[in-house]
Length: 146
Image (cartoon, rainbow, N blue to C red; front, side, top):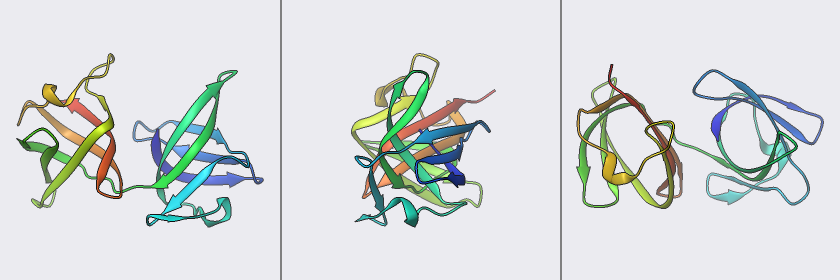
């Protein structure tokens, strides 16, 4: 899951606004790991407005974070697929931003998910959101052009 931090509640909850506009409460515990700017961090380092990615488990219809990382979000149109691990994205300001993916990257191309091989230049558009920690995208969300 990824989104913007709306609030922190007590010392065990993060309220996240997802790219779809949904507010979700995520619980943390002493085992939750935090990484900001590729360095270990703490719950108290999380700031309202920051964009984060969360690896989580679901228990009793609630989200429990295993890991929280800061992210780099890129929105735009898929321009080109490069090899087996990169996508070139054209942003709204006409910049071209490469996004590197790895085996852990999850795709949401349809309700069923998708794979890297499903990506096609121009066929998918309006929004690619990549959660980047180090240089590898962990999640990619693509919406079909209407």
